[in-house]
Image (cartoon, rainbow, N blue to C red):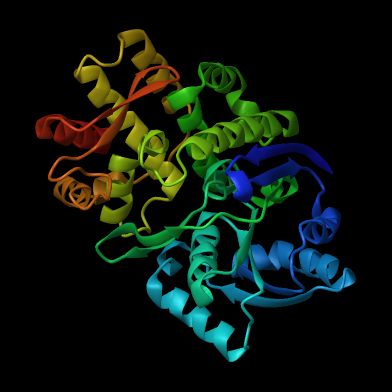
Length: 364
């Protein structure tokens, strides 16, 4: 049942984000309502496909769609140009026409990779995002950012390609392992920190309910995060201005991911750690008051991130930061908290402060 609908307002390309529970039987009718073509390509990974692919396929076939499926190995290491090229080859061999629609069924990796394929196959075909993780439902499936990693950096090859709609069924979250829930919470935390003090307060008082996927709590944070993301994207689709605030925690977070070869940390874990480090930088620079800093760190300490950061070298993390695509010239650009629900873009952070913040992460 669809319980909420949020519009991403982009003029003629405006699209809805549908969220609710037990939504699978409504998926194909919604595709018909949006005039989606009969030719479909469902892209998923093995883990998600084993749990969720067949009910969706049955629903689509019942409504006379013609779905093809591509099932990939799971994991961030699959998000590369070589995997994208193998998908292109499969689409071309199957003679998938240009009026087809790609359906991305999975978490952030599948959404980014399948979205990149949709953005570039035959110069672009339609895309529907069906996110199955908390991280993807509150963040990565909304806004049109798609892409793949490069050996020299994360998300370095990509495009902006908005979906026809986003289909966020919270029933999918029931199959998530605790670590995946924590990863998703990393992005929920970000939205409270950058733009919504009331959401931050809700997290402080309802953390256990969120992490245990209590339905009302999850629907609340999912809808609030999606609304914030939609508002920001509507103002700045291609990250020329305000959209950069969505990168809070991501400068150091991406550095941690890269230094760990995308296997030591998951994205949401890296973002949580990145926000801890970047909050400490903001506090050291007197941009963030002590009470707000205390609240941020107190909530972060309640989240059980089990990261073996001692396996990382500080120098590797710092070298990875130098490849960050947000940098301006030789200066790194940070989105630093200046209060609960407020951030500031800063590109004059002292290197010694960055090094200190990363070293402190390794100790904790």
